[in-house]
Image (cartoon, rainbow, N blue to C red):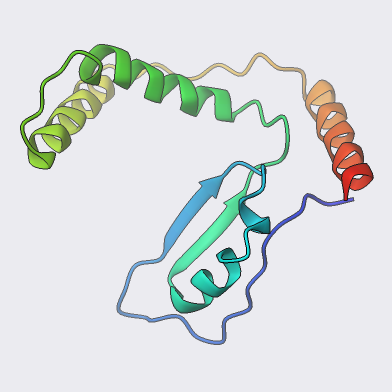
Amino acid sequence: MPPTTLSITVARRPASEEWVHVILDNYATHQQPKAAPWLERHLRWTFHFVPTSCSWLNAVGRFFATLTRRRLEHGAFHSVVDLQAAIKRFIKEHNAEPKPFIWKADPDEIIAAVNRGHQTLASIH
């Protein structure tokens, strides 16, 4: 069974605006009554839901944890502009010496976990 997703069919998106792709966990965002009407009003937004037990998301979480710990946690920001500047400096410094994320998970284990997640979701719904 494929993961539960929110699907909105839109005939036309505004060409002059950039699309916004939002990656969300598959917890229950798509089940909120206001989600579909909101997306219908905001045509350039697209929601993508990660599968349950999505281990690649750990790398993203780790990046934001490092950003928080090294730059934001004990910072004093007097405005949103100051906060944005601190985040941009961190990203620039981080990208100056990039280190690749090395995938150590076994693909067969990932697929098995995804299948277990789909079975669990199917039994709940």
